[in-house]
Length: 116
Image 1 (cartoon, rainbow, N blue to C red):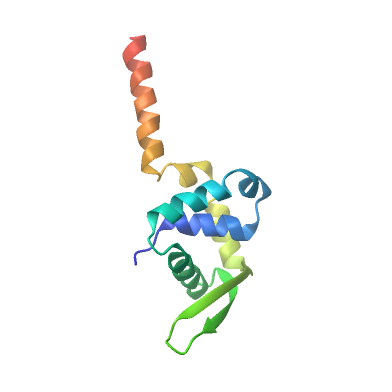
Image 2 (tube, rainbow, N blue to C red):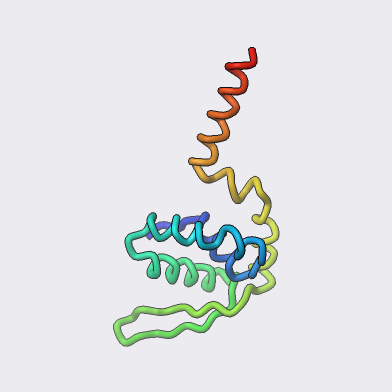
């Protein structure tokens, strides 16, 4: 599985507990990622494991006999909070989304085309 930085941002926003994010965007983002991954829970667990290995979150690891490690995240660490603060901006959160970029440039093109 490859790292998905959008999913990592989403998980950090969920873990940080931004109330405005929880009220408006969390369920839509969960649905978007659930459609993207065949095994959504496995993808979330793998990304939480990467965040734990990077030292961005405190978590409890539960190891099974077959080698699978489940992650129960608790909170962000200092390094995780700094990373979250740097990558919280609107530019970083929305511009990597290709649908947003396509929509933005199509509106810009229509505005320029029809006004000149």
